[in-house]
Image (cartoon, rainbow, N blue to C red; front, side, top):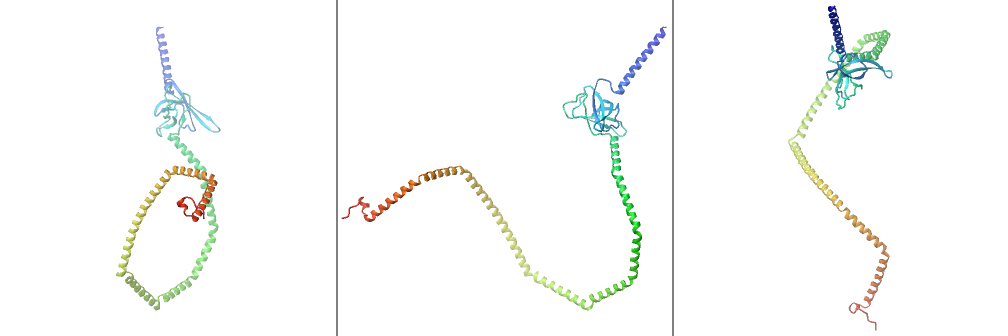
Length: 349
């Protein structure tokens, strides 16, 4: 009786240990070994990603994927990937989640690339998806693009090329008999006319030899060559003689001296230009400095002219009266010059 109780207790302990071990194994397999925070992201292609795919932050494992579900958005299918990471693990706001693989034979993982922001994401928010870095996904995408290129471009090109070859072949098949007939006719004509053409060529060469290489033409050619040689020798003696060479040297020396004088003149002109520029700058400064006094002088002159214009009538009358007095005074002096000495005139006797 007592041994049965011991057996029951042992079996119960074994069952409890087995259940605890099962729970531990399940926790290890699912990665839920403690408190976690949930996040999600979206991809157009989730090749290699499934429940249990590890999640790494800059290579360090921080959690794993627990669900991948399709999402239809505006006639377009995307995939939502839900995953959890260790609770309180800081993830910057501008971080990106990419599907990465360590090699061709390694499994895929969800890699979180660190951002530079100081603020961190709140649990339950979305992490922006980055470009896939999985070699297998890249190869699959490349294969899909090659297949699309084959369907959209290569096959139509091959079909067009085949049609062109067929057309050219058909044209050649239809035209070959006619071309062969024309070629046969041309060769037959050449065979019949070959002796006559050969005789004509022989006669042409004989006439050419007789006309161009006859005694008269050879003598003319000889005279022409002698005249050319004499002209060359005369030109050498007249143009390239000692006196002409001295004159050419003198001309070159004069040209060199003129070049030096021109350079000196250019330097003088540059100096004069600098002086003129300095004078113009000084005049500009003088005009700028005297602009205010000149304006005041013009204002005074305008005031004076206005005063003169207002009093011009009285001035004119005064000048006219003074003119009449001077005329009277000059008349009296002509009649009695002694007025200059006595100051008053004497009545005539």
